[in-house]
Amino acid sequence: MKWRCLHHLFDLDEQGEIMGIVNTTPDSFSDGGKFESVDMALAHARRLIEEGAAIIDIGGESTRPGAEEVDEAGELARVLPVVAGLAKEFPGTALSIDTCKAGVARAAVEAGASIINDVSGFRDPEMVAVAAASGAGLVVMHMKGTPRTMQQDPSYSDLRGEITAFFRDRFTALTSAGVKPESIVFDPGIGFGKTLEHNLAILRQLNQFTVEGRPLLLGVSRKSFIGKLVGSDDLSDRHWPTIAITSHARELGVPLHRVHDVKPNLEALRMTEAILQSG
Image (tube, rainbow, N blue to C red):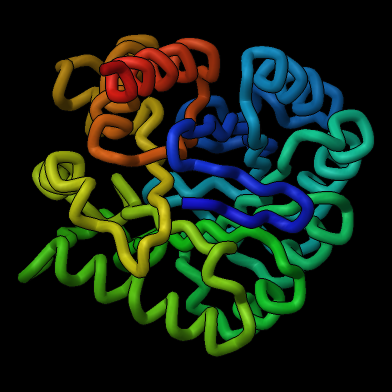
């Protein structure tokens, strides 16, 4: 359960880690426009690191349902100054680039990122090549369709089987290209081409999605399915349910959690780990 991300090594056998989210987009579902400027993004990242985030995930293109695509130049302009600034100021913090574009991933790693988080699951052969050449840690996410189409009546004949088959396929493709197995973690893609029922089924069975012994990363923070369950469109009402899911998922063996609110989720993670390890 070790995750190698260039010069960072996470030992996840007993202690999980929190990935804090920094969106430099004007249209992300939760915090679009709040951290659009470089200074605001850097200040937000500093707060997340102070609260205990071991990883900062920087994204320059919204992946909310129906989101429009951003060209490579626009995405690079949003994320590279933030990556470079954080790499200089916090060399001990792992930086993740949240992108589907090989050119953005390559440039971000050159600027100091050590993780590539690809919501399209490294389907692009060029992205696979960048991953292999970079030595970065990889987050391989499952998504049915694209952000523009993924919520148009998604269906599965075998939800767990289809997701784990995708993970196995990507594991084979990446390792055949030269990626080391210890660089790979998988994300089942809650909310990405899944209905409310699909999301709940994944959460109930998280310990059954492990492939090739690689760890899972979970990203549920503030997502719309939580609002449906609590009967509220207010994003603040998704705060405590997100923390509950973090604790539940850690009990089922998930060590990596991508969240907006670092401190309370880290506290839930450590409390759950202390209970699991006691006795």
